[in-house]
Image 1: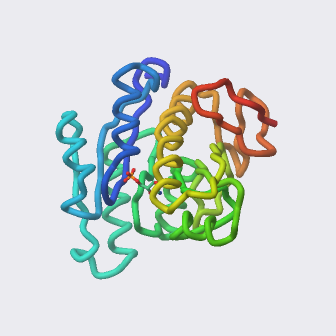
Image 2 (image 1 turned 120 degrees about the vertical axis):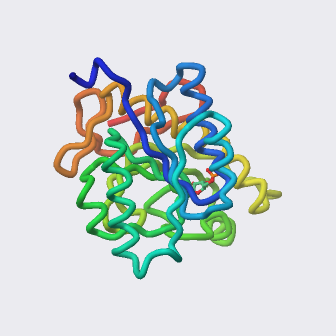
Image 3 (image 1 turned 45 degrees about the horizontal axis):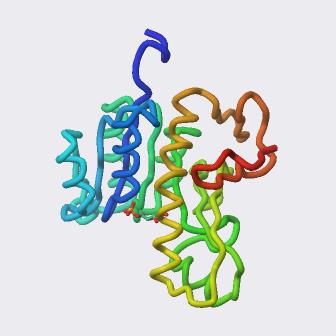
Length: 226
Ligand code: GRF
């Protein structure tokens, strides 16, 4: 069976609220994203995203870090779990574990992440506060391919919002997450439609290598790409 004869399948990895998971579920429901979530995996048993998945009849698995001797043992179990599900794309959506190089190497170019900053600015945590403290005029979110370097894989797409004088961490986060909820399902849809491809370290969009991030401006048409 070729890819065109079957749905484009996802495993979504979460640790908490799962608002991005919800956005993907909703986009699939209204056919704005032509994919199917085969499995949701959480490392936190009480992650609210697990309830969101269950409400939508999506199979869930909990792999709790404390049940494994070390990171390698955890990632081996995670690898098996995902390999059994045989999905096309592994979607990190607020999964708060750093994956081992062995895990990443097992699924080359098949793992994407959404990170709340305009990478390469502000890898790691507390990105909103870092942007506010630095007096930045813009903040945003980035979808990228996951490599073994934290938040440093090839960038696919970004969405940005201006920082206003009265912004707090909470107001900025709310606006950036709103952008995430449009951007992530859109990027997944592009993978499903094979408009996005990742080959040997290069991201291709509509057949051309991306030399800079696709600049997503919400529901408006895409402003520009390489
Ligand atoms: C998102 O803001 C994403 O950028 C980051 O983790 C957050 C997860 O939020 N990687 P949620 O669980 O999807 O609500």
